[in-house]
Length: 391
Image (cartoon, rainbow, N blue to C red; front, side):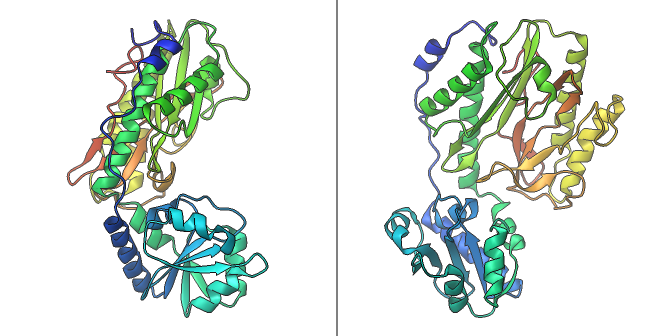
């Protein structure tokens, strides 16, 4: 049985910590990232790059800190040693977390970190696009010549190394295993919240830090891409949509399965088949040099041929076909109209052209792929059928 027939205790009892773990990112790789960012910064006519706390700070320096109201940042000059801007009281914690060689530039609580940056930088400063507006404004107010650094950071982070691909592959394999187990615990009257708790506990048991997010939707709630408030109880003859993911060394998984719990009717089955075809068409359209938006067009062509849409109209596909993924669950580039970023080997994307039939049901199949020299390669194999969510 792939749907039902098991229990939460039985599934948890058979989960072992992941044995074949991908190695973490090395110092040599982080150093190469810094060198690339320096070269791109110089080519952009700037003298330094400021990278705020968050996914990009982890990418370059290995520091897994989120942003707060206090400025914590990596200041990367085109020439010279990287510098970490940090509150003095955080010095010990930062030194324990950082994975690169960097000088510390510390500021006390009654001092301005923005003045500290301005005193350190001479010339033009590129800013992390994820830096909060207030921080960017405070830096500009010091008289610094600041500009958007997205072209530098995105150019580095969009192309994944073999080590990053291995970490992403592990995260996705772990989540696919948990998705299988979640399908097996389903039974009439099980609460969505119970399934969510199980998935989090199972993600922890397999060796991640738990679910990064989890959406469990039954029946009518599947018509809303991010669900409805409140808890649900599963009923016979409903669609089940489960979307969840975890992190491995900060790298994300994000896998969705939609399947039948009983008899869901001919219309839902027909729409499921269209969704499956659209996902396959998007995958087949991938090749280096093709603009990202072409993949979105390929999925929509399948839907429009079936009488859905057109464009973003419902019933049909109301959001993008996919998003980049790595240290952020959603990151550039995007498989959507208007994103003309050329595909290149090492880019990683979700493929999820969700079909929504308003106020009735939705079908989302989500797997991820990476671009190769000749096309695309799946991280996880797509769902075989509406009745068999796993091969």
